[in-house]
Length: 194
Image (cartoon, rainbow, N blue to C red; front, side, top):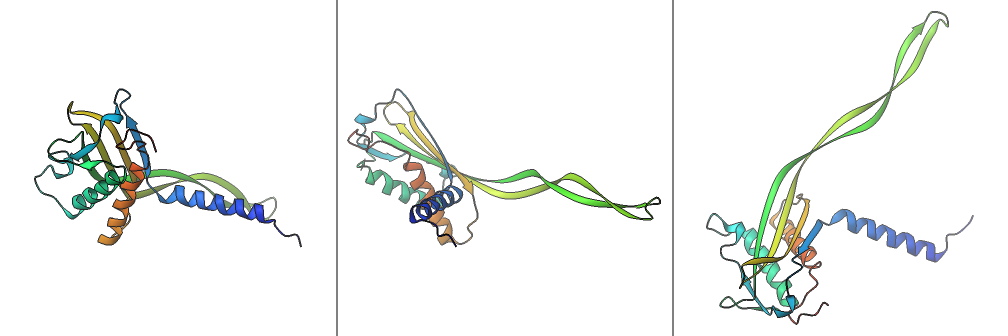
């Protein structure tokens, strides 16, 4: 019996972790205004009114997103200053019902009686079977707006399936989505990229 060497096992473990990380997290997309000068931003505040509070009231979800954004902005050295911020942060969350339709190759056998062979003959038949999958997809978008120009300078969105049911599980998903978005934000309050 041949044994597998340790470096091969290490590479297999790393590959398994990478695949698990890709499958479990949301898809993050970001966009930056190429003319924006991020070195001049030192402070921030929330945009008023927040897009997610368009109906005039807040919820547990909006408060959780606010807390997660505050942690991420603080970690990057930005000072919270509602009186004269350099950046205003806005966010929006949407949950949609989605449908995926895909085909799966199938095979079956049709049986015919052959009078010449005096027996039944199986004939393979190949076809595609349509499958329908319904799920809920959530999108969380975070926008950073230049407060003086009222111009969008950076936006990030996280898109993923909504599967958690309890408030604790939803809170964990919210924190993970905000962290994934800000992991793509390369600036700090000092103007340097980390």
